[in-house]
Length: 294
Image (cartoon, rainbow, N blue to C red):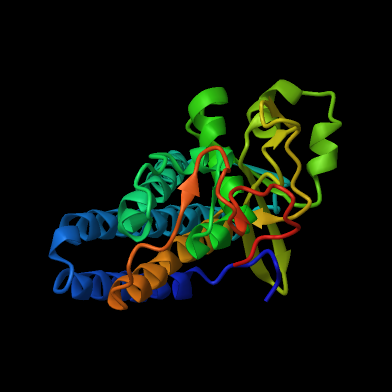
């Protein structure tokens, strides 16, 4: 399978398995942790929401790909640029916006799930605020070495604070070997301004008589001190569905940590200090990682 291709059918089945496993695990913890029951239920609700948005992303992504396929198989010459008036395009944007925001909310709620495991209870209510302190909690140590989390938080911050996702009704799909020609075009460039400036890029190509359709997200979002939007580039071929699915797996894996620590009935053993005064092993938010650990 090409690196541009994503088996979305298998992803949909995997999401069902993940949802069932997480619900079963958290509900079993209810029985021995009555004081935490509402927090377990709330975390389960957030996880179900991530599955809901992922499934909708897959549905709308598939529908856009199907409409591209129909245009290509219409008997006409294969176009270099396909412009679709496609309701699924805007719905995909809405779902992606909701997905990245719920991702941040779910990460924020982790502190409410693990606070009984800490000796001090004054944990930050925002996941992003952990970068000011230190902790010896292995869950946050693992998350701090997952660059994919930072990437999606950057996307969320971009959409919330800097750049709207508002689009036209049209989806512009480009034959994947013509991007340079479009960017260098002098005629009717305003007709494709939406395409050249949009954060999400849609491509297609024909491989072994099959359509390969891809919606890419940028390699990076910010540069410098995370206050300047970088020029969006797409050399890493990050597929919107594949990357979102990777992040969903990461967040669901936090349930394993929650299960292991609450099942063992450990006493509070972790520490956090917002000024880094504890002599502990793991700094939060180390931006020098080379790759995401997925």
